[in-house]
Length: 103
Length: 505
Image (tube, rainbow over all chains, first blue to last red; front, side, top):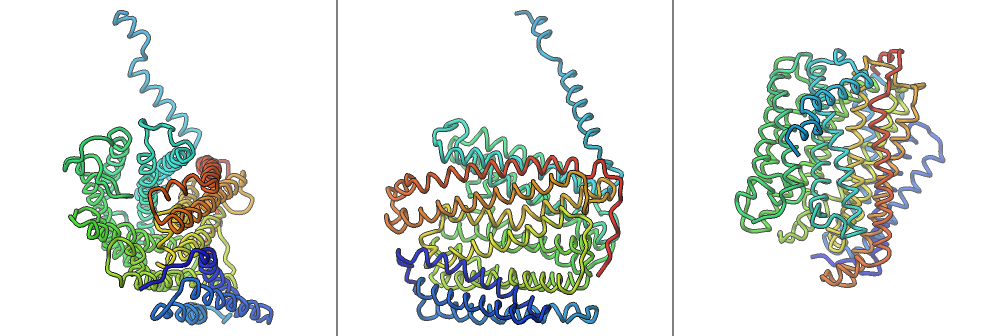
């Protein structure tokens, strides 16, 4: 069963949903960049992006009135967006194999 | 007036034909393209590309007419109604993209398999059959859209399903042509050599043909009917087309950037797994409100949330490659369009899709201009861009492998085409987003999806202004298309330098 979004929460629902994808991509980009360039500022920016994502997921969870098993989506997004770039980075390294020396 | 006098006034058919022939000859001389630079398969491919561009122009023209009818509802009423314009606009888009994909596959297949196309004669016949059928279907759309709704109407006039309105005879023809195309692909790889790209392409073609059949039979229950109809719309677009684009991109990356085959193929498999893993059951977001069981709300919501994962993978891999490899390209416009593809796909499908896909909010947004906003950016970003990138690859080769990197004469043309087309589509997307937001708010939430709510939303100043801005950005898109066509016809014409050889990384 779903509880539709309240009228007053329309904007925050759209905004937080968009921000999840943007912050997720931003975190992925900065995480990958931090593996190439070991600058502390990039790592901090990556974590800041992830924090924005985390807060956006919390906002969406409230605005979209997730209850019961719907909360799995929130948990999946918080965990998935954190680990997906790490996993994908490892896949990049492994698939590019011994031909690359910069790993 | 006597017959003799009439004959004097009217031009003789032979002289009209001669004039047309001369015009075509002059045009060919002006374009100055040498067909001998192409293999037989590539010659077939460019036929598909030419029709694709003509249909692209038709898509934009009928889009402009539809947009104008939002502002002036009486415009061309009873002559060329909104439903017809919208239908031609969307059908032309679907078909030009399909032409682009088929052309791209015919372009790459000989290089990939290491042999000539098997059944080229059949492939050429299939091209003319398909093009003849498309022309006839469009003419019927334009001139025969009123009359009794009989069984014969389904077979000859319009099958009635949104986005795939082509009558059944044309459906059968499309299926036959796709079977010929599949035969060409499989037989060519069987005669030459198989590769990972070839394997993925072959499996995808089976799905491409098979899924189209789901839109060709009727069920008496509207829910059942819509259930199968979405198989074509969603699974074609978010599964088989995405994989086709993956195949085309994989081959293009090898040719355009010198990416290593082993890596490209491995990532093609990963991408297919990610897309199928999230995209197939992401179908559920179309089943929310058509009378399907309630579990589709959860299935659709959950898998729609997963759909951006391939896009995140793309971001990470792009950074990895840019940091580890020093790629150099020999075709700047093509690479620019590939980059536009990455951004357009990410924003159109990822951001615009997820904003309104969960059922808690989709209850208000589905079927509003919000969907149109998402549709415009995602189709352009995911498919139009990659086809245009391939057109630039093809034209470079057609001109004999000329230089198309830094310092290309008149490079402003491709840059302006890129800028205008992207700005136009993004502008239309934002305008439609505003209209959709207002509709979901007023029509759906405040007025409770009533008929009066529909009109209340349509009469809001924000909606009407959004429609005007969409029209303005439609003209920007049209200008971009004009420059693109001009550039494709002329780029590299006066260039004498040859493109550098691509180094495999």
